[in-house]
Length: 60
Image (cartoon, rainbow, N blue to C red):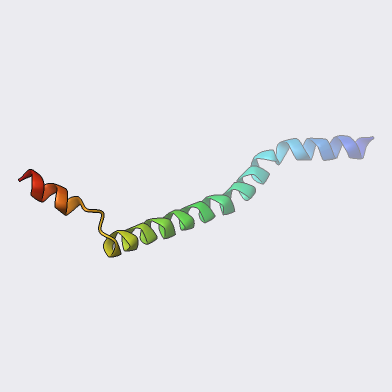
């Protein structure tokens, strides 16, 4: 019974540590993916123009 109480107490005290250990890799993966997506969007935008120049020339 004493071991169970110790384990439960340790779980409650270390809950914040476990959360930060689990969320850190998720944040790193999110930031890496976000950078790759932005880079891909920039390359696609450079290769496939979206026609903004045509709209500006018609307005002028």
